Image (cartoon, rainbow, N blue to C red; front, side):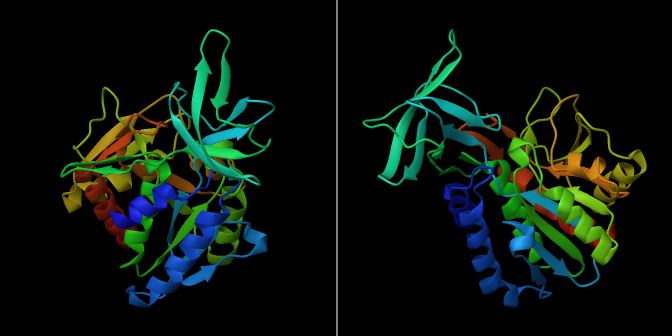
Length: 304
């Protein structure tokens, strides 16, 4: 869990993923020689802060977004949300501007719908603030800000260790409207002919999805994947004896929206562990669900 903790602490809100992208490139460079298959690492200006790992002869691509929710400093003490963070007075926020490091307190006025910060000076406009990381681990759970989606990234890195054929795509902007998966999907389809995807992200604990009962295979959220593809994934999970849960939601979304809306015939399925206290500093995931997530991804990348 040390790697996961490090990932959760890196400042990378939507639109400013550079630090995490650089960290991942360094991690990949130092670890890829120990992996079963040495990947081709694709990155550069034409991919902005995204990274592609190409293993062998790929048939399936895993998409994991590296950005997080947060806040942008507006004018005076005002804040504007990045994505959909929980807003509760007292949350600790951190960041930095030209005057130095920042640790301030979130203040939310529900009646006025006014979002501000409390700090001993005015923070420069445009500065991004994120939840202060307090990583907590027990025998059964991990708890921290930004398990969505640093856990999805961590899981993909575990899968990379034994992956022979496949693509892992680390994308940006998912929490605030997307934008990177469209050009990544175009490149992957045109260069490698790959048109089936798995979305390595974190979903919700709900009345029908419970912590500790296995990775979630989503039958739908605000979008509906092609049924035959999802059924194939469910069947592979059954055959492998991996604990899983089926999710049906009418809202929410992921990187899949750019695949479904693209001009290419992508099949996709959201496969990820469920968390509670979503989009807060206290996101919590059961370790059994993390284990089954990694196990299922390894099976799917081999069998799909």
